Length: 166
Image (tube, rainbow, N blue to C red; front, side, top):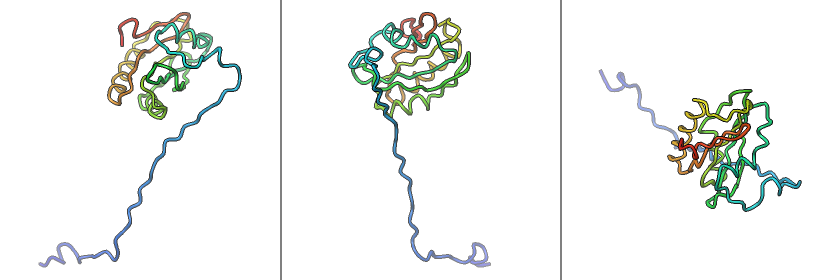
């Protein structure tokens, strides 16, 4: 027995091969709204309470589907981006940490406030709401984007931070 019968004939490549790598660039869209939005999102407003968030986004009380938003904040707690993460059905929406933090990283958010509505009007958190909030908080800690609060909007609102659930 020889080495050639065991392993086959030695093959020497004719020339070195080039390695091709793909570079992925982050692309996001900036929307410029030219209507009177100063009543809605006042520029340079620092968000320091769940009441402020509820006042700004209370239009969600009238929606018939569940919407989940991530409000991206800069280092001074001013809104730099509002991301519609998911639109669900009457009583649920699918939220994954990857989708929440993908856009938070693109907008260079220092922190986020999670927010969704309950079309039923009852802002009490479900078991699923509590579980996803816990997962998102843990994911945020890993990547350095702090989850400040999760606010559920109904006829009134429920703040996870105010209730000590965050």
